[in-house]
Length: 406
Image (cartoon, rainbow, N blue to C red; front, side, top):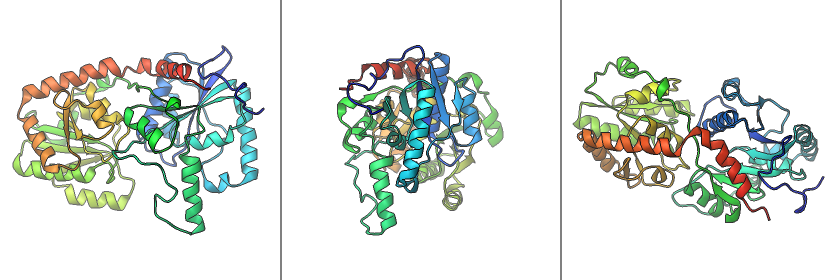
């Protein structure tokens, strides 16, 4: 069946027998990064609200099990993989367009909601009578239209094919009926970088599950041999340049040489072992690198400040998570971060790259316990009033219903 203007569904109109398909593409890793956390949060809210939906994920057992633990209907299914080679194969395209179409029809799917990395699926459901919704989490301090040769000009056929696939398939959000972002920086990127008409974009505030009740005080301090007088500055993320791990190390170096009562802790693993090893060797004197941890609530419970020196962000969930634990957050004044942090109210913003200034802010804040308490209280209040997990899925449904699909 072809998808004409008169035939396609109104987004959000769900009959009793219809469902939403939430599709999470396999990243090839079992690391639980921001997009994975977001998908798990959506599944939790969908399950809690008994919304008719199916989640499809064909990746690692670790992530699959976490999705299932939410109580949502999570399945593995024979869906196409993201690859320029498969996408350029007409036989593969026809085969999986048919397979996916049969899955949608047999499960009564009227809305296909694609998480980041899953946008390529739109090309396999182009002829289906369903509404196509995608999430776009990218943002940049200086957004510009996506170009074919953003990685550099080349006439190499393989490079050209990869560049074409990136621009016209993997990052092509324009065919979607609705592009969902979590913040204004992401929405701006949808229109500026990816060329999506503004009327087909919307912001849906994410929901974050409460974790404080799961935390146990004192475990991190005992592990590190720190008493209650030592202040802990923590950061969560991957050990990559873009996540600001080098700036975190430089800030820690400056502070540690001036104050002996402030400890810096970085939680997260690297994506490149050689780079991770260089970073740990370079900054290990000033930063305790804990690697991947499953006890993040315990770590946040024992921390005093949250430092997030990432170079670019959409809407960093880790900052939101830190709010529940009443941690003032410090970050660069960039899109995403400056949507969550009100400078001087629930945290501190500094000009991008002002390492010396950020180090000074850390030391000044630690020296003002009353200010830390006030900022922490404001952060906790913002978390409770804005990021309730129970409201996440209903906000998604509302977005489906309110968009104009003319």
